[in-house]
Image (cartoon, rainbow, N blue to C red; front, side, top):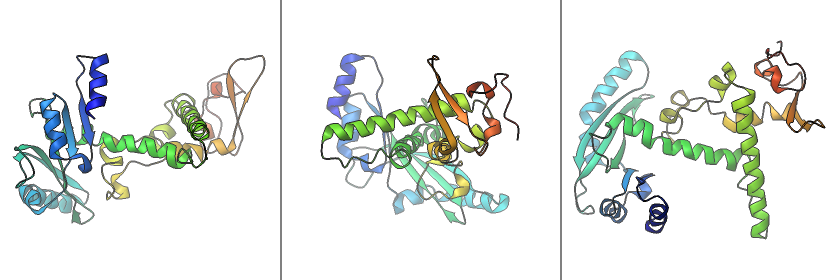
Length: 266
């Protein structure tokens, strides 16, 4: 990590570095290095009985609200905390006290950022949870676009496979952004909410935004979308068949037929 940060600062001397990771990175050596080298951090913090006791009041309030409203509720607490012997100093910890699906779901993070810079809720939901959202993007390539298929005998062949997966990801992102535009299907079925979609692996389906992404776009649409080049034109065009789901949400100007910009008829 020191070598990577050093190279970044060599190129961009005034850049501010923020390390973000799960609880596997929450180690005294790494946090102490960040504090000494002017690098900020926000790491997940493994739960224990002492931490759970710190947010007992907030968790009780969240449970009361969840039972009253019939849906998940959460509270946040910002406090200073240190381990019994492994940390060299007390650090800022944010605890999320959440009651969902009839049980407690507490989570904790530790950070070098001050309360004056960012409040606990925003730090957790906007900054830290975006880590899981980045994992979703990686999983899209690995699970949906076969970027995990690197079993070829040579490095060059494996690199070529990763390039193909990268090309496919760019194509689907373009289709999602340009082809679907602002139509409801894009926002309803293909949007990810960083604060809920990838917050943690225990989150229930009711807590996550619909996870369709490249998988949801690849399976219902490209299986029935034919891409081809119409010479002498220099642009790629999409031929959409009648069986394509969400066909009416794809603007006509993005398809080979029609040019009035109206949605396809139902």
